Length: 165
Image 1 (cartoon, rainbow, N blue to C red):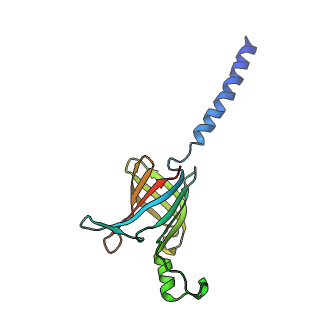
Image 2: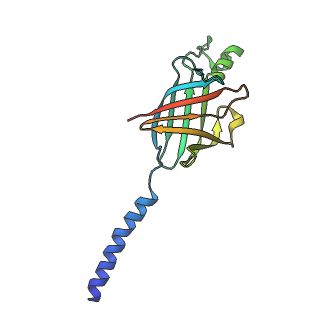
Image 3: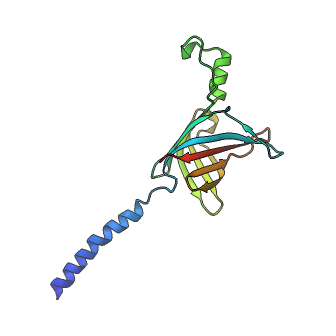
């Protein structure tokens, strides 16, 4: 009888460990690759305009631990006439900077308030580095949209992403 109990205990321990490991390794709910559908601005009157041109491009990658990398690009950015990034004009540099949003760090989700919390480790816009930004989100199937807090001009950036399958 002792041998049977000992065997059952060992089997229970073997079965229990993988279940505990599986729970500890549950993937981040938004893990995956997302492609940009829209990068718009919400105006105080409720109207929307494009923030990154007519056909913005972007990629949001989120790993199973909530580490993310996000990039948004205005498709209409001009080429540098010289073909050399170091020799750009002031207008070319301005268009490159204003037509790009890129940052990475860690992401948390508050499902009760429908808030994404970005802990920005590094960003093309240096002022964001080391900051935490909250964005109200909606998730409908494989479409994620969120609002960035209002800018000083009162406009609210909205990003819409679709999960890549």
